[in-house]
Image (tube, rainbow, N blue to C red; front, side):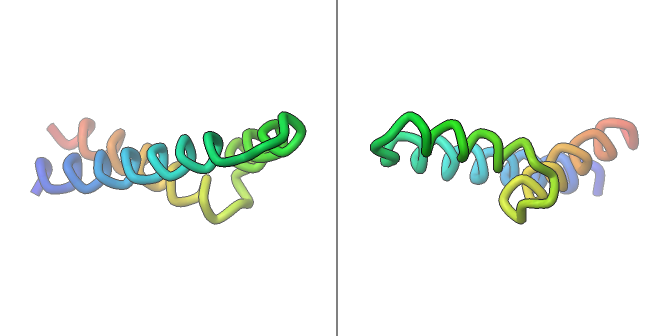
Length: 65
């Protein structure tokens, strides 16, 4: 069960980071990139919320070991 929590958390983190990096590469202007980084760090955004769920799930899985 612990390993499952850790693996699922890592999958969530990797997929959100991959999507974020891909979106940053496709953004043409620097101003838009800065806004995307701000939105990623803002915990009210659904994208960053999914990332933080993965991070806290990973921490919880590691604490269960």
